[in-house]
Length: 138
Image 1 (cartoon, rainbow, N blue to C red):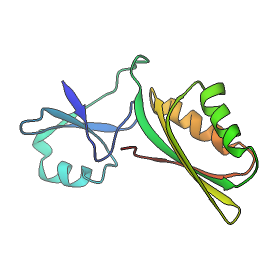
Image 2: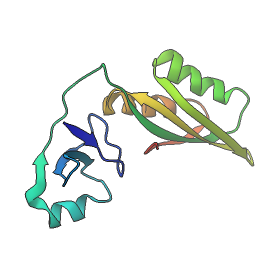
Image 3: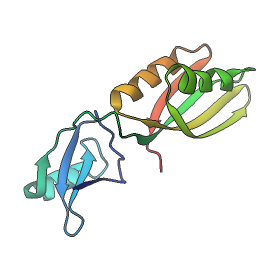
């Protein structure tokens, strides 16, 4: 049994390590987790090598921040790509526009990092999109 660390929200495909906690069992952290350096240096004896197993039955909630030119239909293009073309389930979507630019946060359910990377790449290819980056969904 294991749980995914809330501090870094790992998904399959991320580089990860296991940390044996006291009382909570094994927690999985991303290697670039804000807590990784402290855990690895101070508690190395409680760190376990961890590897993902492919499982398309389980989805993981993660977020992406999209910034681009505010234009008529831009939200439609984004949601059609995510839900329609890529068949990825959207959990939440917030968009705010200011001075000709929009900033959107989209929480999506993905199966692994490869699917997330495909989503990020596809969004960057849409006309008017300036940046797309991952954030850890609550």
